[in-house]
Length: 255
Ligand SMILES: Nc1ncnc2c1ncn2[C@@H]1O[C@H](COP(=O)(O)OP(=O)(O)OP(=O)(O)O)[C@@H](O)[C@H]1O
Picture 1 (spheres, helix red, strand yellow):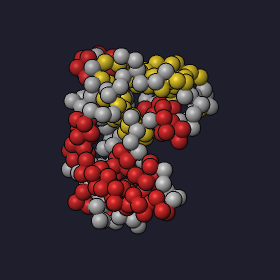
Picture 2 (tube, rainbow, N blue to C red):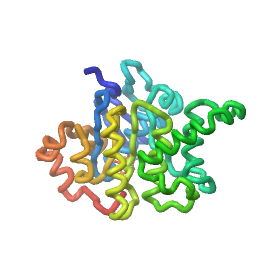
Picture 3 (tube, rainbow, N blue to C red):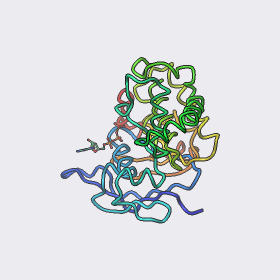
Picture 4 (cartoon, rainbow, N blue to C red):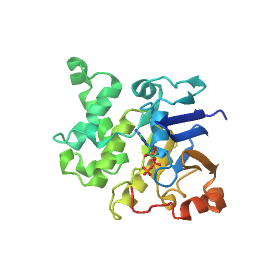
C-alpha cells in the first residue's frame, strides 16, 4: 500500500543544533503509528514539520504523493492533516458543547454566515454531541470549558480535532500533564477512535509502555535521528532501543 504521509531526509537545525536529522518516515492509510523517544529526541519538532508549524532546513514532506513541504499548517489541515488543538484554542468562558460546535462550524465553513448558521444549528449541535460521546465527555456538555479538569480538557481538544474531519490525526502526548487517575480515560478515548478505523493516527508519546498495545507500529527517535521502526514487539526486543531508554537518558519525570 502507498504511504499516506512520508518524509524524505527531513532535517531541521536551530542554529548549530540539528533537532531532526535526515529522517525517512512513512505511514500507511488507517494505520496507528506512535513516535516515541526520550526527552529532547526531536518528537515535537518532527510533529511540527509534519503539521507545517516548522519548515525543514532540508528534505521533503509528502502527503499522498504530493510534496507539501512548503504548505502552511492551514493548507495541510485542508488537505487532511489535523493536529490536536492546544488548550489556547479553547474558549474558557464558553461551554464544552459550544466549543465543539464552533469547531464543527469552522469545518463546514459557515463561521461568518449567520443565515446558514441559523439553518444548520441543530445539525451542528447533534454532530457536536456525537463527538462529545466519542471522547466520553457528553456528561460535561454544559460545563464551562474553564471548569474542566486537565484530563477533560485534553478530551475536549480531541473532540475539536475530530470536528475537523481530517483523514489524519496528529496527537501530541495526549496524556501529558495528567494525573495517574486521568490516564486510563484518555487511552480509552484513543482506543475508541482507533476502533472506528476511519483515520490514520500518529501519536507522540514519551513513555513507551503507554502505547505499545495501541500501536500498529512504532518509530523511535533519538538525538534527532530515526533509531528504529517496527511493530511494538520488534521495538520492545530491539537492544539499541532498550539502551537508548535505559542508558540513563530517559527522564521519566519530564513531560
Ligand atoms: N525553537 C527551537 N530553538 C532551538 N532549539 C530547539 C527549538 N525547538 C526544539 N529545540 C531543541 O531541539 C531538540 C528536540 O526538541 P523536541 O522538543 O522536539 O524534543 P522532544 O522529543 O519532543 O522532547 P520532549 O519529550 O521533552 O517533549 C531539543 O534539544 C530542543 O532543545
